[in-house]
Image: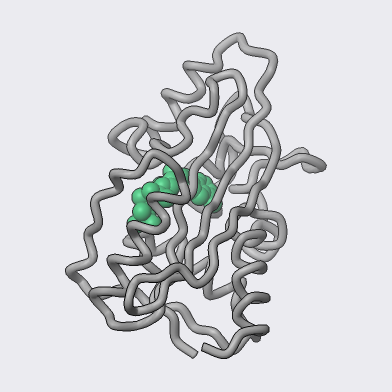
Length: 190
Ligand code: ITT
């Protein structure tokens, strides 16, 4: 079964298809005109905005991922604004490290809210996945994307960008959310 993955972030699509391998589900990109305005004030709202726009444009079931990195001492920032925290990913990482300079409490979590929407726009399923850890003092590693070079998950001593794809997918916020979506899909006739 093909499901539209409501994103313009090719890294998310790649990870989703790796996590879903052997499930019988393949995720495909939305039509080129997909360009929703993320005006929500929560991950859940933005996730719904993206999924409903992709479902409407494609006429198919769509799944969206709205995600971000929430740092405890920054009151959850960059959070919802993770993709918009600075102009480039390198600058986003630099800004976050500057904001945490001299800070001992570096606890943080990745959050991923997924919403599955029917072609007519109603929510079929919504769930949130988490990955807890802390922010490193400097970037390391080249795998993954986004803030992966500065995030060290609990029970690890390396950043996500130093892990292979399979290890990331097993413990990530996206992996945790998507496994729940796949379970819902395997128990439901759509
Ligand atoms: P779409 O909205 O098109 O899906 P996006 O990248 O703009 O793509 P979001 O609005 O959900 O997606 O922002 C998520 C940001 O959070 C993303 O750009 C990264 O900066 C960060 N992020 C999310 N998941 C991540 C992960 O697995 N590893 C590293 N950073 C991640």
